[in-house]
Length: 479
Image 1 (cartoon, rainbow, N blue to C red):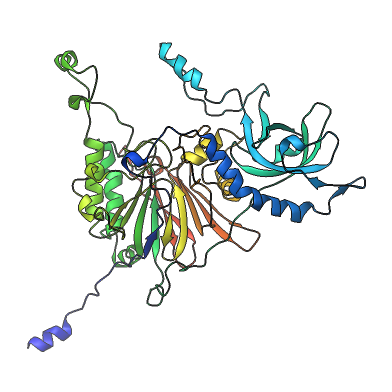
Image 2 (tube, rainbow, N blue to C red):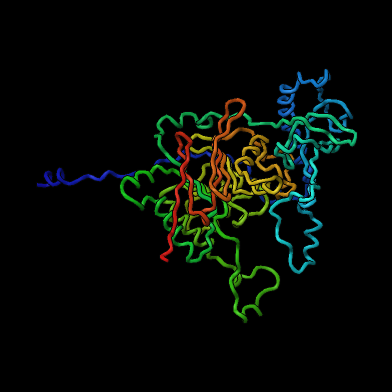
């Protein structure tokens, strides 16, 4: 009788989540304690960047311009910008500096202390009166660049380029062509993980989400609950759940909580509140607590990479260090132990971040480098800015000029040493994606991640084909 019943009963196939192969790089982790100092000069970063990328640009420029002639005059290379001679066709390598009157100025910041209300932050540094100037500098001096060709080239402070042209009677360098370092070598899939793909099943996905903007209010609940149910595989039918099981990892790219807003105080509390120091009565723990609960609910089912943004409880300067596990009393149990080499199920990481996921080299940030480049250039082509950043081989070219960063002395970690297969940027106005190619056959998938708080969108990346799709979670008003 028992055997007969077992034969007649339908057998439900158990669903298992796709396993995640994860191998992060720790290039942006800063030293601890007394080994970290902010007393150094920032100029050393520009010299390090120029010394590292100048040989690369020189080779590209030499290969492109070695036979170039105008009116039987052959172009020649000069080593320093001050060696340029008037009327001579030549090319030189240096660091771009954008002299823009509307850029932030430390003297203006000091003056703000005396203002009743500071002016709003500028969306663009571009001067409407045409006062902006493009300079090329090295250790010897600075040269002003001019010419119609510059209108068709995206340049910002900090990128290393080679320029060809002649110096005119005004002492300006008339540019007729520009070369950039372009994409470096691209590693093969599974290059850092020999043999890791031998028993690896295909068909997996990586979920990217940015700008959760958790405030702790009731308005967060519905959209976050829908996202949570989807990632846990609790939404939809059996076929939908089978698709959700393909997601092997969630990458949260910055601004998981809203900007800190103090609690409203009663009149008697205002009178007794502290004037200096930390005041616990004005601290609002709700956003961080809700984020901790969100992570703790997901982590038993799926691993998470958490990248901080400019609104998260991390240091403001780049590279941002991991959010401290003390902020997550419930989910920190899934993080790696202090001193452990292997990453935990919850990997609270740096911004920018780089590593290997499912054998692919993936690189991304919370959006600050692209948002800062946006202020330098015309238009709003975010994918174009992302492509230019990769071809400059610098993950944060405007640091330290207008993007705060740590004053590195012996290395510039923002230099891109290997081309990623996937480059994502968080907290952008809308979802966009494209594929770019390099001179040696490199292929990169660019992904502009929208803010989930505003769009309800997450991006799913296929780990076999690197194709992407967007999943939207929308809450309709009853009205």
